[in-house]
Image 1 (tube, rainbow, N blue to C red):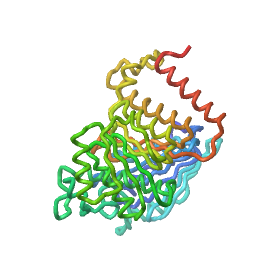
Image 2 (image 1 turned 180 degrees about the vertical axis):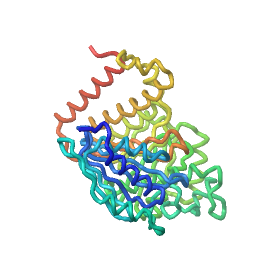
Image 3 (image 1 turned 90 degrees about the vertical axis):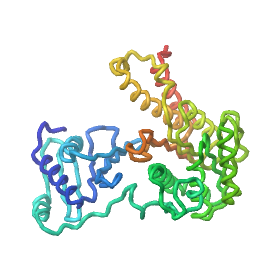
Image 4 (image 1 turned 120 degrees about the horizontal axis):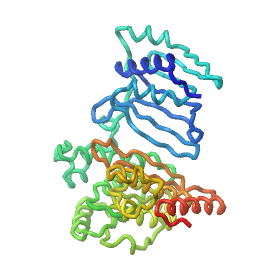
Length: 389
């Protein structure tokens, strides 16, 4: 039951905003949501490009997680979010408080007075923050030989100014890989980078598994650009990355010799991402991490009168088609037996192409369940393309 106006929620949002100003907020856990498909949300402070921000992670009941960030207007934005939940637990370095709303609409706020009193104090302990700009959280330091060979850092290990965004990007990608390590074999890991391009990420992933984790791996990187592949092979040879192979070929025609454990792809353009996902899933990859690039195919073929109120605006049409395309991709992967998520790869200020599609192979899914998921996928696609009978 959502209140039209709530003094208690307004007070809670104000307290949270003051805690943010003093960087004393640890996290806010929001549960008992109004939306039936949502499980809970967690709001955590984070540093993005040196700026204090809030990251909202929303968990759905079908095991998906969605992220977005707040950079300003904390009090107003938080209040808007708070109204959608009947229980809110705020945790800070100064203590905790809890908001509750009963089914009948009765609201209570506990612990807020102590927090308000402590906020007026001179010495407020700051909460520890995570972020993409803190060197201690980076897996790569900048001093690695491959970063120097690729021109990301200079001979002293300082990240070159023009490569700062790329450095943050590959570090963040490695953090995502670190989070799925337990889904891969303990050793003898087969990794494929499809549409590898200049292969900054490829070299980083090889270094991470081979030199940081000390694993036996075999890595194959594939792209159509002959000059790029020749250059990458030369760099790999100079670095002594002997279990790393670069192949110049259309990924659609490439036949995987070994079962893929991890398939990665960074910014494969348009339908190349679909080819990557199909190649990975049909070969039974254990984990797929793909960050799509441009999305043109659905924009050109969308034929859905029900969505004309959005599609008639060209800018909104493209944004909608971006989201629909990635949602369809995740639906298809689900129907192929994967647990899927859409995650934020990196700060949108570094690149607008910052959505990562993550798919982890599930162990036990019945054929009936997969058939039903595939039916829903085909029905959704037909609805969007205007081919549904």
